[in-house]
Amino acid sequence: MLNYLSVMKKIFLVVLLLLAVRGASFADTVNVDHFMVKENPFAESEVAIVAVDTLDNIREDVSGLFSFTINGFQEEMRFEKGTAFYHHKLDKSSFFYVKHVNDNGTHAKLYYIYKQDGKLRPITVSWALLLGIPLALVLLGYLFKRFIAIILIVFCIFLFFNYQNGLSIATFFESIVNGLRGLF
Image 1 (cartoon, one colour):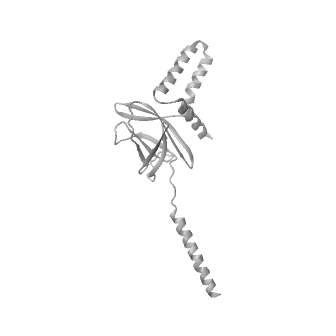
Image 2: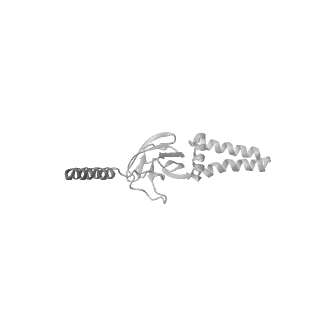
Image 3: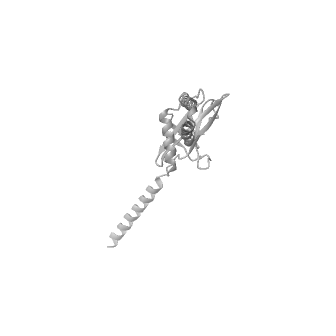
């Protein structure tokens, strides 16, 4: 009987030790829930994606490979101390749609990268602005029927500007839907 208790104590200790080692071996996973696009300070006409917290402070604990969709193309971005470099040159000002999917959901942002004198200036484009401009034009057309031709011309210019700078209709609507989804 004494030998049986001794064996049970040893088995119990081994199981506890295995559970402790198993719990310590799993590291916390790091998620990129917030990010921003900045000009790459080390390369001309390139941008960097920076993992940030809700206060836009760089999260230096983010390192490793993360999958992003940039302008419809799947990219594996290597983060080191919270920063990943997108090694594709931007020839002109254009829209830049960045999306990341992880366990916490889909995180997407639309930027307009303004290029002037070799410098890049990323400007965040709000989904409300994307939705507001066409709705405002429709409302103006409804209120001032005399100016419907001018409003249609302005609307066509708006669509042409978006298309010419790389914003497709699918990206336009996806950005609005992601913004609306973020409200709820």
